[in-house]
Structure formats: structure tokens, C-alpha cells
Amino acid sequence: MSTPPTPPTDAPARPTCRCGHDRTHHFARPRMRYGWTAWLLLFSGASAAPREILFTCGRCGERIERVTDPAILRDFLNH
Ligand SMILES: [Zn+2]
Figure 1: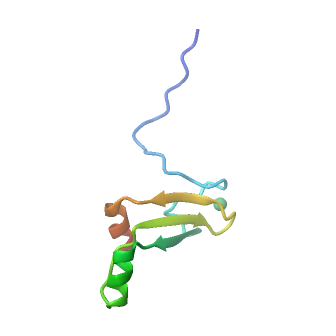
Figure 2: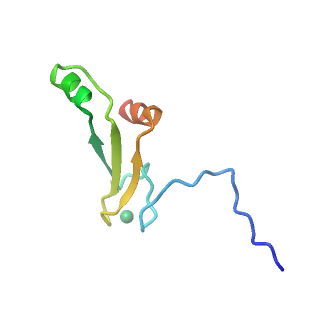
């Protein structure tokens, strides 16, 4: 009996598309999705954080990741 090798756990794996791009790659195309309250804020001229961001690959068109973590959403908008 042999034990399978354990993968390194220090680097958290981000979801990627089939060509291996993650959401931080420049091929990634973010698509913002807003809730109704955010739309109202946007229409009144205020800035609002999206409810979620869908990242798709600009090369293969495959969905990379769906981000709903508010911390990541705000961090993304501040870039
Ligand atoms: Zn791709």
C-alpha cells in the first residue's frame, strides 16, 4: 500500500478556466452583477459595490470564478 503524495497547502488554489487563467490574469473579463439597492445607489450618483462578479476567460470563454465575498468585491473596485 502506498500513500498518495500530499499536495502543498501553502498556496491556495484559485479556480481557473481550461487554459489555466485565474481571475487575476489579464485575460479574465469581470462581469458585475448588482442587486436592486445597488442599482438605486448607482442611479442616484453614488458608488455601490456589486453583489457579485463573474469572471470569464477572454480566450476560451469559460467561466473562471464567481466572486461574492464582499471583501474581494470591494478590493476589486479599489484597483
Ligand atoms: Zn481560458
